[in-house]
Structure formats: structure tokens, C-alpha cells
Length: 147
Image 1 (tube, rainbow, N blue to C red):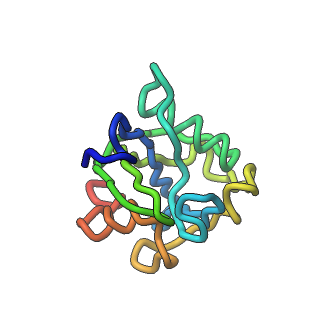
Image 2 (image 1 turned 90 degrees about the vertical axis):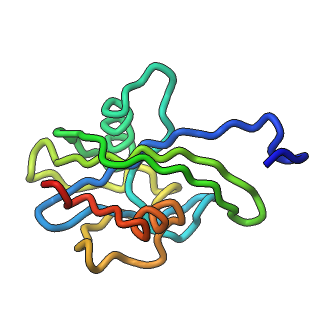
């Protein structure tokens, strides 16, 4: 895909956290230029020198105020997609995690980035999903498998 807009561009790496609580998973409605008004897991860009687990814990804490544990990599995806006329390329590192303490409740720490967090049953996810998450789900991804 070499043209005037992608030449020299490099993919970004995002760690995406499937945070489980009982039989539910946490999602929030995005408020950003990329995927606005779609639902996605908490997560974000991997920083230089950071492990996937460190990134997952940091991003969840920054976005929800929650502490997590038992972080494990489940799936890696390669996402090339267009949003509002702009081309994006993200490598998604999907991890599963549990709450460090089950009595924690998520806070909307970044209200300019998310409308809030909710717990949803996997078979009844809100719509629309953020495109990379929808693609993962369509390919058979399920964070409850192998538990």
C-alpha cells in the first residue's frame, strides 16, 4: 500500500484489554476522532520498552481507575481500516485480565475519550463495536474461551 498517504507510515501497536467480571466483559463508548460512538475495550498504545502486561495495567488504570491482575495474551490481530477518509494500521494485542479486587467499580477517568464503562454479557454486546473489535469477534475471538 505505497502511495502518497501511506509511504513511510508505520503500524501502531495497541494493547486491548478484555476485562472480565463473572460472565461479563467491560466496554465503553468511544469519544474520539477514531471510531467515535463505537464500543470498545479499554486499552491503548504500547509505549517503548513496555511489556504487554504493563501497558494493559497502565491503560486500564488511566481510563477506568481499576487495578487488574492475571493478564494473559489471547490474540494478535492485524487491522488495516479506513475511518472518516483516513487509513489506519494497528496491530492489536488482545489480553484478558481480572479485577485485582472484585469490589472495584470503574470510573470514567477520561470523559473526553469515553462516555463511560459498562459490563456486558458476551452474547449481548452493545452495538456498534469499534471496527478492530468487530473484526476480532467476527473471526471467532471470545475472551471467555480457555478459562
